[in-house]
Amino acid sequence: MARTKSARELDRMRESCRIVGEVLRLVGQQVRAGVTTGELDAAAEQFIRVRGGVPAFKGYGSADNPFPATLCTSVNEEVVHGIPGRRVLNDGDIVSIDVGVLKDGWYGDAAKTFAVGTVNAETQRLLRVTEESLERGIEVMLAGNRVHDISSAVQVHVEGAGFSVVRDLCGHGVGKELHEEPSVPNFGKKGTGAALVDGMTLAIEPMVNAGGWQVRVLDDGWTVVTKDGKPSAHFEHTVALVNGRPEILTL
Ligand code: MG
Image 1 (cartoon, rainbow, N blue to C red):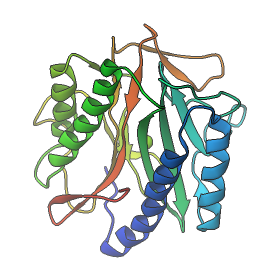
Image 2: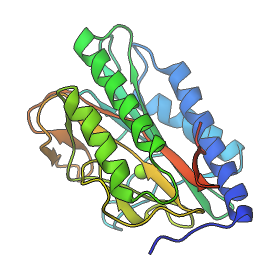
Image 3: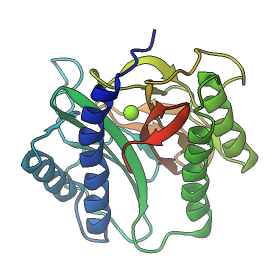
Image 4: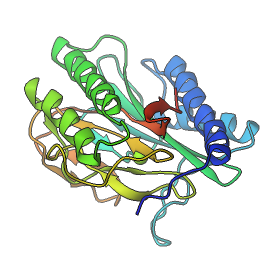
């Protein structure tokens, strides 16, 4: 069962989610050829801590291989969970930035793929279609609809454009925990899945591959890459269902 949030709880989530949105804006201003993913990560962590938040991904996972950073920075064929470090971004790259913030016991989670300098037309189209698919998913997050209405809206838009949705990873409920029920796949059958009700808060996050949907995990235990080496994009918002309608909390 999804844990629904009261009006008061949503107010507190709005605060952590606002910081998430601000981090993505800040990082977006710093993405350029020559910057390292580690520099972006340091700026993001400092910003979150100054605002009284805690980076939600840092230390996440199993004790023997916890995620070591504030941001996931996934470049080109990296889908998600890329680890920031010395890698220098180059003109023509794309970089997916995923960030989670914990503040006063509540989580926010969002992601956006940025172009570094000038990227080719097909990659630009990948970014546009992925962002649009997130919008299509959010539009049908309506009271009375079902979770897989979101999934289907994302999948139909993506596949209609000739791209594919990652199957191995899903969106999710978010709130007191970073990952709550229900899971929100990016593919599925309309009219199925859990009912959407007021007070639900979902991280909707299409991960879209230019080529096939298959992915694998690198030896670092985190970085997910496309099997065919083609680029992948990722857009995510934390969205609340309020008065029957979607409210994007991480704008
Ligand atoms: Mg997420």
